[in-house]
Amino acid sequence: MTTARKAPAGAAVGAWTDEAASAAIASAATVLRLPTVGGHAQGIAAAAAKQRLSHLGFLAEVLTAECDERDARMRIRRVREAKFPRTKRLADFDAARLPALPAATLAHLAGGSWIDKGEPLVLLGDSGTGKTHLLIALGTAAAEQGRRVRYVTTAALVNELAEAADARQLSRVVARYARLDLLCLDEVGYVHLDPRGAELLFQVITAREERASIACASNAPFSEWGATFTDPRLAAAVVDRLTFNAHIIATGTDSYRLATSAAHTTGNQAPRKETHPA
Image 1 (cartoon, rainbow, N blue to C red):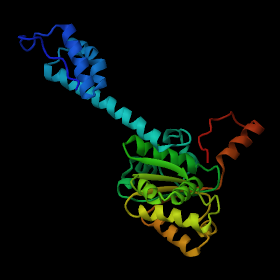
Image 2 (image 1 turned 180 degrees about the horizontal axis):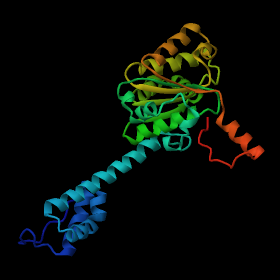
Image 3 (image 1 turned 120 degrees about the vertical axis):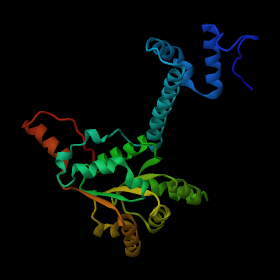
Image 4 (image 1 turned 30 degrees about the horizontal axis):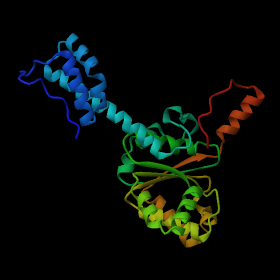
């Protein structure tokens, strides 16, 4: 087993040479899995000396740096694990295009307390009105706060569940989706699901009911979901589970993409960065 280097035999505490101390710190940091301490201890020590920090102050600086770096790595890992198709953030969302969405509501959703309570979020609107942007951006915010998040389209999820069922792995896959803090389900209602696919999707929704949040985006009003889920009773059950204590946001019918393209074509305004993908 690897161990950190010890002080020279007979040496008193504090008798380290700088070279021996640096080697011991690097070795101990490797054993304890503290890469920031190992890589930046000398720089932090130099800064602490200039600031005349106490030994406790120096130790606080070292450990805080390690915690900050570990937190940053965790945020990056959570976002990567969510498998978002592209990068979208709330800072890039043009909230002025959705006057029915108060800034306070958006700030509340960004905070993520609704996720901790297991409350659903439903984004309804036509294509190009900002649903997917909001879905990814809110999911990204949740992931960066340390939550386990996964983005998936409805069709992709149903295909994954069907393959798992054929391989007799359905319970394992459903359990994996049930453990997520937030499931971002995009394109609900875009494709017709056969009875088997609808039932498989319903299993995931039921596994998360009132316990873990689902945020979904759909271009179809609830009254038309029956066309997706084929069985009216199943459609009603899905709507019931996704709307109970839910935050429902209507993104409207005016396509941001269409408006931007028209403006570019006519030259009535300077090109603007597209912020609403769907």
